[in-house]
Length: 292
Image (cartoon, rainbow, N blue to C red; front, side):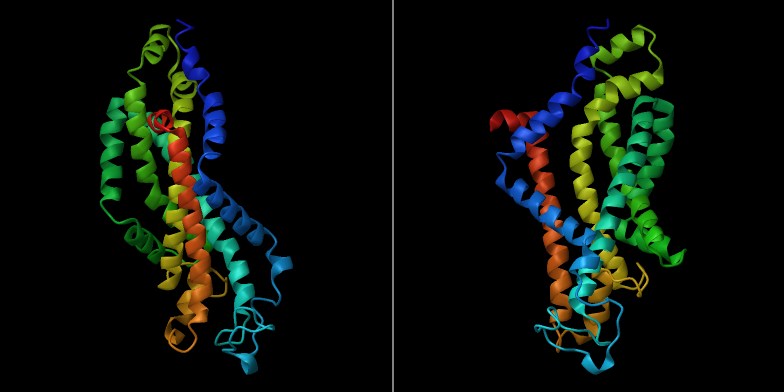
């Protein structure tokens, strides 16, 4: 019986090898990974890349167009838009990565249990279905309306909105995996439930979860920008791409650059994450891999 369980235990190693080799055949995924890496480096080295304090106010130099002094121009308070965009990358990327990690871990734990234990599935999935019936943006807005504006609350609100989608994905995988011969052999051998979930089922959910995490990260960044744009996200004193665009929406016709630069950064980052996710999906899907 132990030999039947070996394929499940060894499935993680070929996953990473297959992912590395297949991504080399996906130029768009490599481009996405490169752009995302650049954005992460920009966020990490923001204190050294920023030319001026992003909170420094200079009323006499407000609404200056892009120039050698103000690369991206200055806003209505005379603050350097370039520095604010650089520091805004920290907030947007931190929210996206944190939401992807938290929602993946929470959704994985719930999905493993609900997919394997039938009576838990009947209760928990009805709750998840109810949450999924509400658009994620509206659910995040409702949750933020109950709390004060902060980065932590934004991460929590978006995570709660994204968890049901991860739970449904993991549950669908577990429903298939628990019928496999190696799982039935483990049950017949008297293997405990925690060991079955962690040893035989969990490794086979890694590949789809990696792909799902990239989409959750991109969705979280867009949701954070929407929340900040309508005033329900991060506090105004913390520069984020959504906040920068929100403050400049009334000046769009006379100073379009105030929205242009943070909008480009947000679009490029989300596009890079989606390209990376598409490449990972093609690399980890056995049917597409055989076709290629």
